[in-house]
Length: 282
Ligand SMILES: Cc1cc2nc3c(=O)[nH]c(=O)nc-3n(C[C@H](O)[C@H](O)[C@H](O)COP(=O)(O)OP(=O)(O)OC[C@H]3O[C@@H](n4cnc5c(N)ncnc54)[C@H](O)[C@@H]3O)c2cc1C
Ligand code: FES
Image (cartoon, rainbow, N blue to C red; front, side):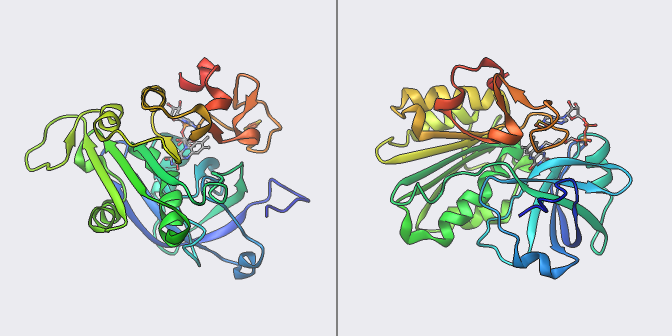
């Protein structure tokens, strides 16, 4: 719904809530925001997997996935890992401050085409952010889908995002949720090991299933290889890529993997589209 007459023009949003998901030098902070001009909601429409350029005036903007599902009404969520100039400036913002949002951008996970299927999500670290809207979309439309299996891992338990929701997923009867950390921790009751190994341990059936994965490129590489070993066809596997971006709208040529522009043709790709492009997993 971006302003077609000027795709560089952002909307101003106000931060309604904000909290840290994870601690440390590369902390992840979530922002729950609402449009300053509430009439933007009349035309705003995003789908799970879509992104937006989020910025701070006078500093710059960066690409982030919209980590709220369209079924969560009245706000948007972004979860931002502190990396450099823009993300550091965003982390300084608190409730009542404003930031800018330009979007929604890019394609999305075809959740409507997946109706009637079993959905498996496999996330690592901040890679859970684009999977969260898929999970919450399926939960809000539960009758339209078969099983929902969530696999999610991070380096340590403190690095797991969306911890309260993970508790809900674990206790929910209609969802299966498996968590992992890379190395043993005292009082950790779930799996210990890398996410691709967790996947093999759980071994979800490929029958009538769609697998969606996001995380560090090396994790995506081994997860997709393991999904193929489990019998998933490349067309049953989806991922989202996070190349560096500048314009976000297919004009600057900054974000290509092979012949594909991540901002224009993605960020969502099926494994069938990218399996022969080595840069996609670099
Ligand atoms: C489609 C898409 C979705 C994304 N979704 C999220 C999200 O939901 N949450 C989130 O925290 N981040 C997300 N990112 C990554 C985010 O855009 C970068 O972390 C951000 O641009 C860094 O900006 P900066 O100015 O703070 O850092 P810079 O000063 O530009 O760079 C600091 C460091 O970050 C690295 N970096 C910069 N851009 C990226 C990138 N795109 N991917 C990986 N490393 C990068 C640089 O190599 C450098 O090491 C997404 C990126 C894309 C393209
Ligand atoms: S970010 Fe400019 S072409 Fe993709």
